[in-house]
Length: 220
Image (tube, rainbow, N blue to C red; front, side, top):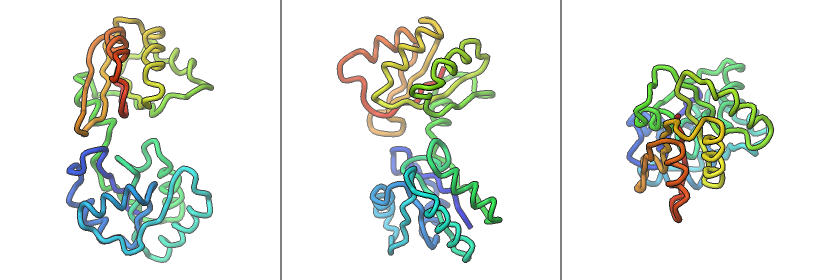
């Protein structure tokens, strides 16, 4: 069995009892960064015992094959990411896809999600929304922004600290200064913040010295 285990996106208290049980029971834990997952296991006094398998965006196909072979041998593997739900803007979907193709039982262990956390706290309509992950850095970026100009639903994107100011400036150009927007920063962490207002107001706010820090989710 391959268990897709959601882990905290910042606050270590945001983990389910079921997730903790699966992490204890699994024969192996496939993770992006063994150090990050090791810290989580240590926090909850869950033994490692050499069960951690490094699996990240730079892992080759041979690593996928190795994990699939273990699954075929009736091993129970828990798939985790550094934060949140595996498969959402991380390489986990490749392993999940291959496991399904191999006839392996795949089961989700839900909760922590920056997308859902941001959209429910935004105050925007979330009956219908579009999640785009990280916007293209170069190729296809302008085309995507233009396609969203006449949107009739809520849109959610991730952005890094290195590009947040550029992205907000482009949003003002493409969507207009008066469009309402919510930017979530460091969600669930000590310095969690939701900045609400027009795009222009938010652009001006993040121009302040020291404000551009952390990880961002933009809802508009």
